[in-house]
Length: 86
Image (tube, rainbow, N blue to C red; front, side, top):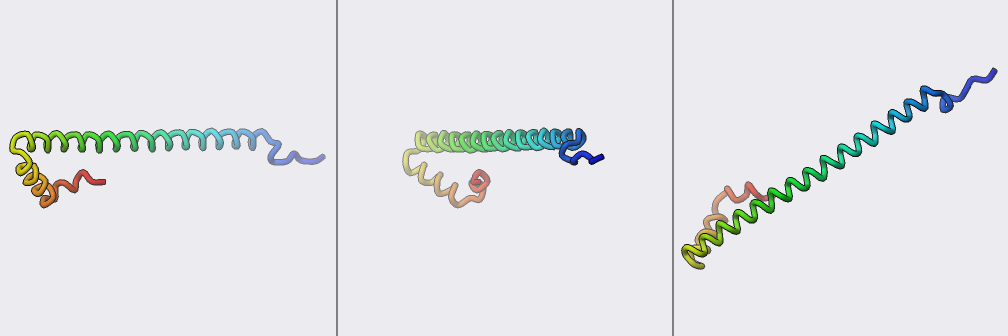
């Protein structure tokens, strides 16, 4: 009597099925986390740019081009503006 091949056994087939389900689930979670992270970072960058543009517009409205130049020079000389660069 010949023994069945390992590939033909039920335990091998179940193991292969569980492995494929695990890999698919792992891939799905990984892709979801990636796209959520990209979306969140894009939103943070857009919000930072919008806030900075509104602030600079207010500087221009209150003091003209000279006040805007002064503000930009202050931003360039301070270290706090590097917090928003990725």
